[in-house]
Amino acid sequence: MKVMAYVLVQTLPGTSHEVVASRNVPGVIMANSVFGRYDAVIVMSADSLKDLSRKVYEAVGRLPYVVKVETLVCMPSVPEQPPKKREELRLVTSFHCPSCHALNEVGAAVCYFCGYSFQ
Image (cartoon, rainbow, N blue to C red):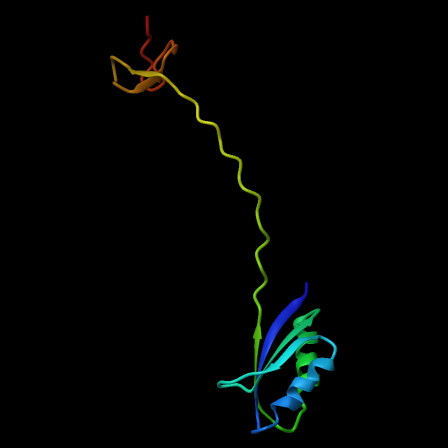
């Protein structure tokens, strides 16, 4: 199963463009410099978590100007389920048993609950 991750990278000032150059590393889908707490975001794909760890190290972990790396591994998506077939409703006419007052279907010969015989 493929593993996808967002890799958030903090770099030394003015070096985020070096991280963005890592988009040439196999497994890197997209890499961009960003404003905010992190300086670059890389979207990566791998065949397993172990493979992802190796690719993250190859892409940014070994770079000397990288201060912090945070990897957000994507949760697998739930496959779409076909809509469940609705059960058809059946209309039942019923009546109360004169002995126990339980509901019985019209046409029953004996009360299901108390055994009273309908004449």
